[in-house]
Amino acid sequence: RAGTVPRDAGIFVDRGGRVTVVARAEALTAPGADERADFPDFALPSLTGPESIRLADFEGDVLVVNFWASWCGPCRREMPQLDSLAAALAGAGVSVVGLNDDEFPDQAIGFAQSLGGVSYPLARGEGNLRQEFGYRGLPYTVVLDREHRVVRTFYGFGESIDALAAVVEGEAALNR
Image (tube, rainbow, N blue to C red):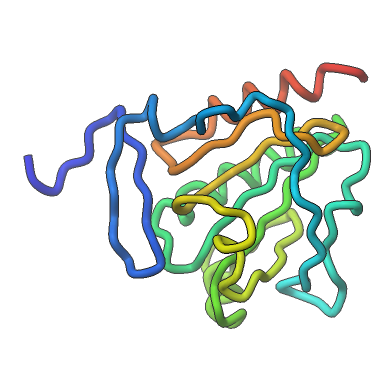
């Protein structure tokens, strides 16, 4: 039926506002995601302050890197769940960081404020993140191990972050 998204679908939104719906099995895990490749280093300005947010700031932590933008409807539903995950695992050596791909920081700040804010750090990519990190759509989330190698990548957002949480909790339990 037109206008209805199947329960087993992943939803992607690009910068132009185009929505793509794909089967969850295809959408949630990227091919080759379990190869433990190094994640690209980054140092980006904070969305909310004068400091920079760097990959090195999370040394020794399992890290959830979430790419998002204010124009991404699924990001609006995903971010509060990521914030809850960040709070629940704060003492377990797990961190979450949000990398925003809006060109204008005010749009991203307004978006985060409309959600009541989030507890994890937010950095601004000023419209350059897709080019730098090569993802195919938003939201895009990468789970990194304690050595900041890619454990798993997730594209799109369905109804929950349960699959993501299971990967993060499993990784956090290793090498404690």
